[in-house]
Length: 637
Image (tube, rainbow, N blue to C red; front, side, top):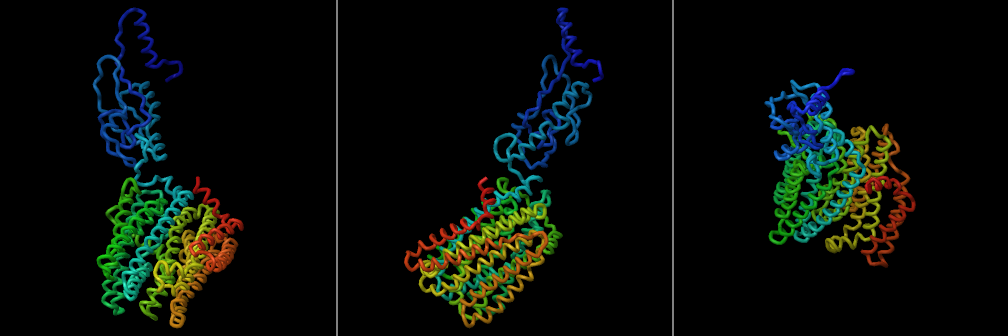
């Protein structure tokens, strides 16, 4: 308005005052007013930029919010109101741009200025909707927004959230323990339902399928995880689809390799049929593990933990039913296949539902991403596969140099180390996400996360060794029968070997997150070569006890080599708490010795409790667990 002038509104007010003073009735000029916009409206989500009813623009899903019902749209849309007189003919406004002002043609200056002031030059409800969406609330009710993709600024923040990672790790570890207990129950039922020779065949088949991780596990590659926490939703969807489909294809390849291996060895007919049936586990489990990576990128491992427990319950119930009605080898391998089908279906449902991850998988697969995954993540996959082969290759050497009875006894000894490996992998899942999110923006946080992971896994392995080593004989006799008591020494050694394997996995995760994933496949190859060569020399003379001893040496050597590479890598120095690990090792040796003496005078189930309590108390007093205080504080907050 020019300096010294009067507005249309003030002139109209003076005109009405003069008319009232003179006693004449002057019909006021017809005015159409617009109510101030409500604080919450559905205009932003539906592309509605004009404050008029009856307009149905094209939907706008840019913010990932849910649609409004017609009732909510009528309630939230701004309305026209006529004060007096007859409403003028309503003209259809022109459609404006996305963030254009809410003005119409042929409007007065004052009215257009007033409308701009109310709308702020764009949709007045845009900022309100975005603030509500950022808080995780629906604009129409106090309920969580069903988002399809985590917004741009939140994906990386969620990946670096230490409290969310701690909760996800706790849920994963707890579920792995429950799954391990249920798996033990199923194993005991299978062992007692089959003869020693059939149990050896059962163990050989699933041991062979476990070795296929070299071909089927692409690993949580740095490039895959970085793209899954990317800011662009289209990149996330394309990466998820290509990654899952590639893993599914690798599962089919692994199944064919396992079947070809047993046929080439001219194995027994029962072994070939069991491999053909149980090999379907690889076909379903491989894409299922790929879906777990999607949950890992959002620290949503609680749902995965619940699904794993439910699948294991289904497997145990099926094993019990098979042992009661058809206790034969070909029937007892079917529950494992049924479990993987249930888990895969549940994970896919959770990944695509609005209450879960809310992902929408495109129907097309970008083959160029396959080449990117294979080029960037193939060294990591080879490294993980060689490490796993180093751990499990002694089972094949024992089968080649001994009998199926020896394989069965050695498999029983491996059950306790497998439980510890499951806990290690569960704890590594959120740790990997934290490391990838912290590099290279926060090198100090990266080193702190590495030290926390080493101390946490070392403490878990030390507690397992202190609890199991003194009472291994009694535990094997209780769970599997006195005939498997001879495998107690091998079980003790394999639990100790799992400690070295845990340190190897942490070192590999550190190298992969720092972009040094090409450095450790040769280390794994060296460890695998030494392990197989030593097994060929030792197993014919010492049996599977010698294979367990070789596993301890090879895992310790591989851990030393991996962390030597980490220490020599730029940007990842001071990532290994050597003093804390050495102190914890000394405490573990002392507690194990004390427990071995106590088991002669104390009821043996009380010895593991006493040993773990002493170890934790000594670790706290010596300051070994100081690195974990920050992580615990974040989890509590």
